[in-house]
Length: 513
Image 1: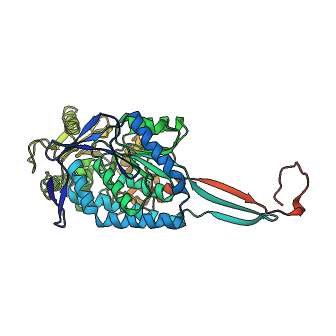
Image 2: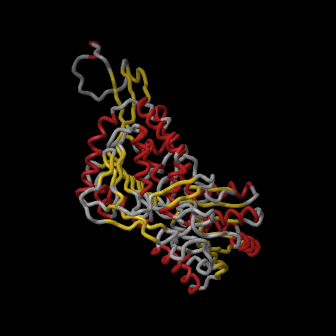
Image 3: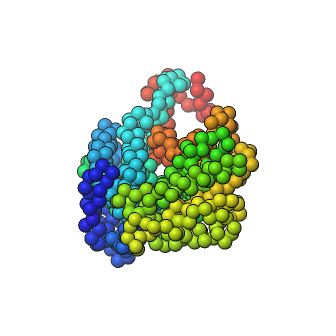
């Protein structure tokens, strides 16, 4: 057992004594019949904390079957009953989020304050879903034709699958499952095998909140589990967040099997800094958005596009701020934690080496720093490159680590063209005090989420989250009203009660008179 101190000085204990984390089915742990497991690490120590079960095809079938069996009763539950469960879940989540944050930090590595923020942002979607009665309302038109009424309603799909990434083990699933459950669906969540325990913790909260067994299930695993969700005809929709190549696979496979799919892919988020910007504010933002959560965010700023006339001064301010950061165990009050696995740390370090060999100027080398943590932790400090060009791998690839690349441009127009030419279109930001330039940018930039003097423009829960271009496959963004639309389908009913005056034979097409 490990004792953790959160930002409010609460003592929290998490399970790190080994064992195998099972699936969660029908309101209880489910070991399954597969003997395959994967290690779950504590990234700050480099040690294996536990194993997680990797589902077989039979395990996946059992989990999907449980959700399929639970769906009809939950579909037919009153909106009042669903609302009560959602509110109870919200209260439990709020009361125990420090506990959840500790679990996230122990398996992902992000600092506790960041983990708490993740749960709080996910809670926004739960609170949105608590308004399900209003958001699921249909409509009625009386006397659309003579004594004919037309009404519309939204109905749940059935079993829906959620495939979520390691970087936000609480927030990203909460983009989807509160809305899916509120709308009357049954859920199978397939979390990342790198930090899977949060999913089981959330399942326990749902159980405590009174959600009927089988409505929320957790299927742990790898490609076997993913492919089962993508191909099983009982699964009607898939929500996915991850890299672009896997998003393409999920979208093409899921839709080929007749499913509704929203697949959110990778990112290369740019932050454009104009000469009139407050450079202290911009420097703070670049550091916060580039190195928060060790850069393991789909909304992290990884490309800083600086107009050349202010680039030197801006880089100097960023370098000064980077020198004050402490990288180490997220339970020790550090600014930045480790990367999620040793393999990922080595991959990111490889990009740093590639940037040097390709000719970028290495201003701060994250490989050569001191770390406040165990020697075997998966450490890599904040790294800053200058004079990066668009043909270098540190620019073209989604690194997903604490590497910030400065690309110099001569003007707003050159910066805008550079951003719009990038194949990704997830998030972007502009820093300026010129309202006209900001308004031009929000209109002209080809990106789904835009920040104006806001470096990480993650929308609040009642707006949708989603990118453009290679950052989104499918036509539906996450959460907001689009979420309720995705997890329901429309039905239109045309009604005329028995009226003898409308009897008789008439083979013509109705003329609505």
